[in-house]
Amino acid sequence: MSTPSVTRRLRAPRSAVGRAASSPPAARPRGAWARRAPLLPALLFMIVVTQLPFVGTLVISFMRWNALDPGDRGFAGIQNYKEEFTDPQLRSALTTTVVLTAAVVAVSLLLGLGLALLLDRKFIGRGAVRTLLITPFLVVPVASALLWKHALYNATYGLFNGTLTWLWSLFGSDNAPQPDWLSVVPLLSVEASLVWQWTPFMMLILLAGLQSRPTDIAEAARVDGAGAWHIFRYLTFPHLRRYLELAALLGTVYVVQNFDAVFTLTSGGLGTANLPYTVYTTFYQAHDYGQASAEGVIVVVLSIIVATFALRTVSSLFREEIR
Image (cartoon, rainbow, N blue to C red; front, side, top):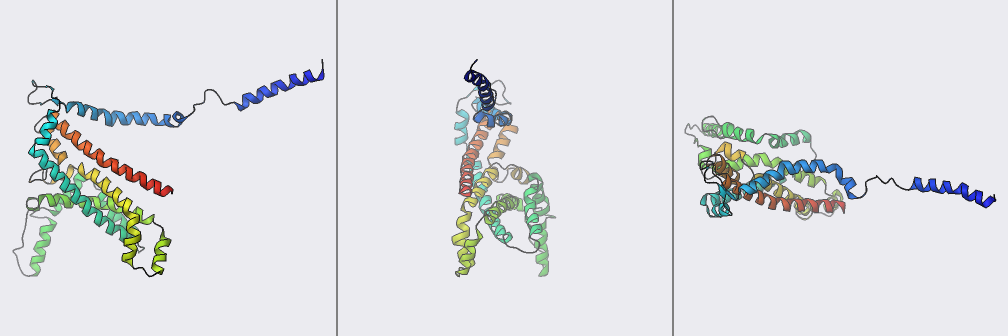
């Protein structure tokens, strides 16, 4: 036996072992599915909880189905949607929803911006003040509406009328006006309660935007003689533009779907019925399941449109942070 042949026999197992050690296991998962597989249970759960009920609602919206007339049930096509867009009650509810949402989002956004600018400064007790200002957002919506209805708006023992009585008594008068706020200004009363609840939400988003801005640019502007208004107008406000858009869009998504305040404060009367309350009355009072489902689909579509813009704004914020 020659020496080269022995050497080849001895080297062959080493190369085989090396190849076996360097080659990856065949059973190891590869590609994007290896990263996405753990998310599949959560995705399936979300589909079952959210999408299947919506598909059911969408199917029922094309049906003629009223519990008061069970014998007349069948496929109605787009008749429910035709009735919705020609119904004066729905048009009134749509107008009320737009007015309510625009007023609440605009006022709460302005108040939230002012509070965020105040909390952006350093002062003693800032943490306690911030916690107190966040509290209204943490209150259960129904409890918040009940608080405004009984503790503030009540014509007999409410805080607002009590304040009017005290102010008139300072001038020696016992004839202070005692208006029934929910009857005199019903929509404004609903808007005020929602502004109180959603202002902290706007404040938190805008405060996060203020604390993410670069401070060296503002300091350089102050050194160059720029005043507070010029710094806010040319530096702070442009930086907050995306955060303002995000807060407005998210607030719109939530306020459009608000039901608690309208139901608790006015029960939809005196021109305060919005789209969610109209869906409620159509389903639980008129028992028209097909019509109520069509109204619900309209609300969902409007919310999805606004939510799409909100997601695009969030994506643009993330891209700016990465840059």
